[in-house]
Image 1 (cartoon, rainbow, N blue to C red):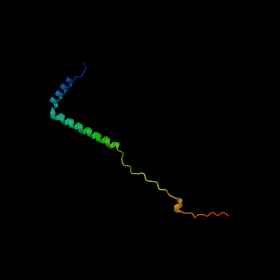
Image 2: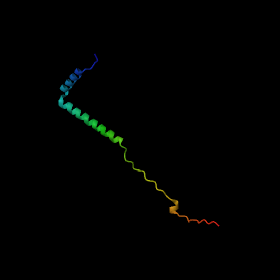
Image 3: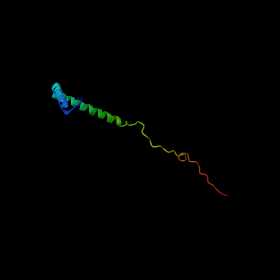
Image 4: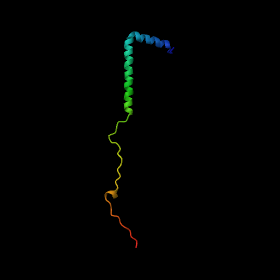
Length: 78
């Protein structure tokens, strides 16, 4: 009592086939497969990060001496 054997599943399968017919069951399985594929595609799209609008730019080094060169002082020792 309470155990489900292979014979129970066979009887359930036969009853489902008689009620819905072979064509309806195959259509239902096709729809289930399409739903699973759509779900996987949606999950794959969520995992990929969207391209960011602000891409990192290489920092520019501004050399103060290059823009405003100071006159060089000559050191003299007396």
